[in-house]
Amino acid sequence: MHILKKAQPNILVIGDLMIDHYLWGSCERISPEAPVQVVDIAKETTVLGGAGNVINNLRTLGAKVSVSSIIGDDENGKELLGMLKNIDVNTENIVTQSGRKTSKKSRIIAVSQQILRYDRESKNEISQNSVNNILKALESSINAYDMIILSDYGKGVLTQELCQGVIQLSKIKNVKVLVDPKGSDFLKYKGAYLLTPNKKEAILATKIEINNAKSLEEALLKLKSECDLGISLITLSEDGIATLDKTVEVFPTVAKEVFDVTGAGDTVIASIAFALSAGKTIQESAAFANLAAGVVVGKIGSATVSIAEIEEYEATLHKSTSDAHIKSFEDIATLVKHAKENGKKIVFTNGCFDILHVGHVKYLQIAKSFGDILIVGLNSDESVSRLKGPTRPVNIAEDRAYLLAALEAVDFVVPFVEDTPYNLIKMIAPDVLVKGGDYEGKEVIGTEFASELKLVDFVDGKSTTKTIEKIQGQTC
Image 1 (tube, one colour):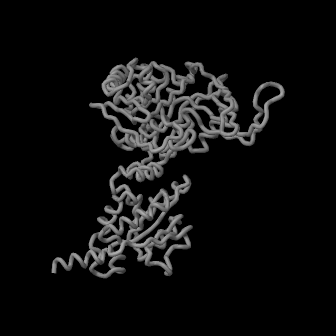
Image 2: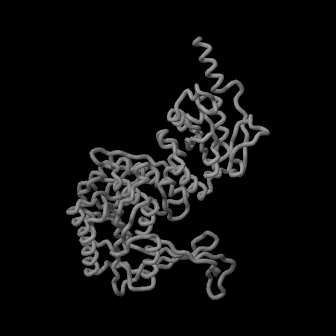
Image 3: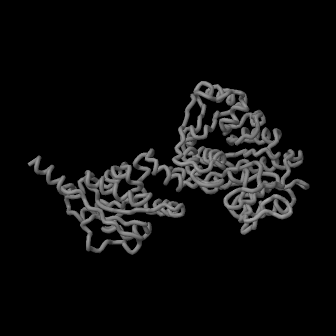
């Protein structure tokens, strides 16, 4: 994850752009003119749809994004260009085709229920002149891209000629092309590095009913062979992602709660493209995409995901190594910001945790019960020596941090060099600050930055000092 946090690949998205338009209101009566509901509109919102959702995901992951597509010479086209520029997307390769309608899907929603949707768009294939213009623009700019994504929503932009033109150019320049396909004929994507069909799409394209490991392998092999793919891949919804490189591998899903699968496919292809561009293997990229999808399906509506959200989510699964849970001040600031934005309750405690024992574990388990995310501030070796004496710590900070991070109750460990975690608490501003019961009636550092202070009694007879005394008594 550390490498991905620093990655800024330049990725080109080619596909069907559209505006998702929402009219929000309430409904309290039936029209006297016809048996239909009357919706009193309170607000309007617009978001990028179609290939725009792939673009949004790439931007939130940290990629530099360019887009190539066809829009109409209409007000919707101008609005769409403005939306892209507002999120710092390069729109130089967007071509205007006279007479074409820019896609805009309007939804009327009352009391959280979609009442009606009406579309304004052109769905016929783009003109030959538009195909030529896109390919000409790509030929002059392709060296700038680390990866190309074809996002097909079946609205006429990704014709067979355009797809093949893009793929052939990319092969000459050694740039991978990833495709989110549409329809049942995948031959127009022949020669791409990989496709990301879901199970239903793969069944339609291969005419193989995927119902066990054998049929899954047959479908992957058929896609790889017939479409001349570098990697064959099928997304399996709640069962994860299956890939075929040299052998078939299935990466199980890691979603804890599923509220809405809208846009999950866009998140998967954006995540795989981002990870591959950063030098990750297909196996690492598929695992990363599973984590990303696990985040977005826990949100309502077509959603995006950031590295910080994925990192936070992975920590809660406790499937990562201890190293992944040990954070710097800068890292934890970003994670805390995202956690709070998503309504998570932050708990903080601190200590030396020199020789880990049952008293520590029970204390941390109780601390975690006060919220959603437990952050543990850990004294550096120098500060432990100043606080406990020259013979301490017994275990160096790296070892102490690693052991703490391995505990299920602990989400993140942040080492600090001062004698107190004042600056760390100030930066985190936790919802709950936890200290030992021996602080009853005493001043607790950092309480002014926390919403609540909780005191937890230690387990009688369990302490690092007593453990050391016992060891010394046995060896004397």
